[in-house]
Image (tube, rainbow over all chains, first blue to last red; front, side):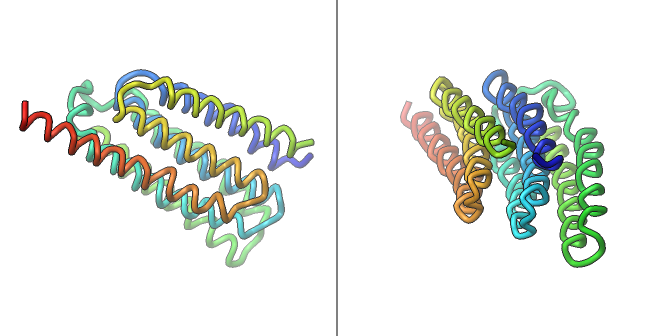
Length: 147
Length: 84
């Protein structure tokens, strides 16, 4: 059993599980925030799996997720605008969590992976994914807060 | 061993997401749960060593299906408002 796979399992149980819980109850805003958080955690999960299985090509899944995740969230924000309008000032509760979680979880995952892969093209790819995750979190948090 | 644990965990996640999608009544909110189910399925395919299937599932499940459902809901609601 390898450490990366254990980390991926922990992230699945401890990260995606609560996201599903939050996403299946409550207001529309809370659900969308949970879905957005799930895409972020799934992206990190894919990175850990790629390292755990020793298959660098699996990193492509994370790359697709970090682009599609925020795009999906923006679709929800746009099409659920009426329901999101009723949210309290500052957006749904989950939206506030997104930036801190991204700031902590992304470097905590990407930096050890960079150390494990060593310098090269694979490491550049990892860093690009990290930057895209940060940008995605900024854009979606702003969209969720201001509608 | 790690594989079995991961596959079991992911299967549980997919089952829970599918159950939640069925139990949600409002179609607009159901789309959000359906998107989570799509993400779970993509993870399941990856854990089962089929990342190519996971890749297409990611596109279809996480973005396209919810978009189509939400567009349909919007159109139906508008028509209902106009007619009623």
